[in-house]
Image (cartoon, rainbow, N blue to C red; front, side):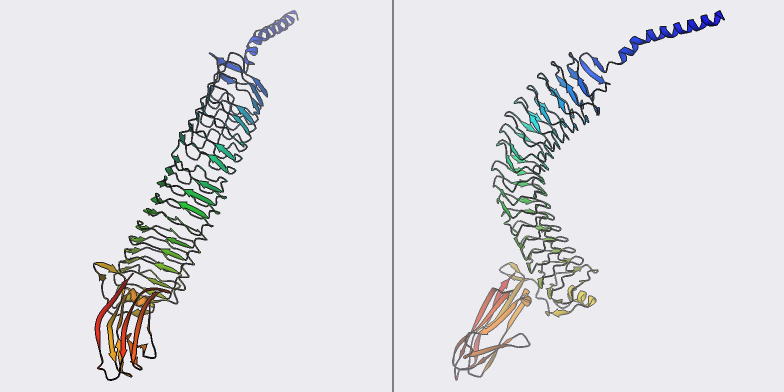
Length: 580
């Protein structure tokens, strides 16, 4: 029995001894701060208020990352560095002091601190590094010292509650996306010390309506003011280039002026600016990029720069109120879908020098009534004029050799189409769908004649092709020749004047009238000639006038003298008028 008691006593003593020995080890493990050579490298505490110990000079990488319990942090004097991601994702951190003496705040140090409302950056900081305060969605007040020279990439990105920012004198660089998504920021004054301005700095700042740019920048980078609140904007005359999408999706922008200092502009520049009405672009600009005015649904008219050499794909795509455009000389191609979907476009002037009309160029331009294709065009691609349902007449110049698939599909009101014998390639699957009113005019033995027969489309033969129409070494698309200059005749005598159209002449309206019906009358014969009948002595002029639509493009006249007892005779001529 005594031996059992001694055993239990010894066991209890051993337990007490182990507990006593273990106590100091347990006390060491409860210290939440792991510090090495002044650098805080780990924190394991669970406190809401954290006081970093004196003597810490640097907070290491990711030390407090994602510690959701932390609400307040007190940093010691003597701290010089806050490391990369140090407080990132501390989503309940609402208060922190940054003591003077800090010289570096690392990348993403306070990113996603979503309840932080204010921060004072201490003197001595020269750079707000990449993503330092990004996604601090409740950050309202930021104080920057004059020592800051650079605000890094995405430094304040998506700080949605930031209403103002005082950029300090001496600031040199604003990095890419640095204030992107600051949706309450409404006014920015940029000091002239800024010489480097990144892309999309103020992208999606959809309350920003006023800005003063530094006079020492020459370029507005791509995406700079995308989705901002400007109602008007005058680009300063020290800017020489503007990057793509710089003013895209500006839903309140009504007017913009581009000065003659600007020579280069990127694609998508004014895309989807639904209220844009007035655009002034200086003649120094040579390029209008792809989707430049795409979906600018309030734009009615625009004067394009005289020196323009490129007009991009979808440049005026779905500009629903655009009514007319004069394309300047220098453009060599109407690009794919350039005017597609511009449903109120009525007239486009295409200059000589354009060689190709690309696919879908005028697709769904349902109000287009008049279009003149110049004699420089050699190829018209697929769907280029599909669903131009207001087009009644169209003439293909004798420079064109190929017509693409369904290039006139669903042009339901098209009545007259002239196709010259220069066209040797027509997409055989081209059905001319929905063209029940169409008659095609062309020459005997031409490609379009056999195509029309195969597709059972009414064909109007213009006889034998005259070939190229030339005058003084220049090519023309049409002509009208009158075979008489003067004629004398007795009353009741008749004389036939020959009027011979060629090329586009067959598609023009030719009106022939007598200046004095009481002296001589005129009427058209089935042969195409015009018969003059003398009525009584006197002089009349037979007036031959050629019209395109209602516009006079050329005219000629024949002097007719009616006199009793004279011998019928006249002066023959080949009085020819040429036109395009």
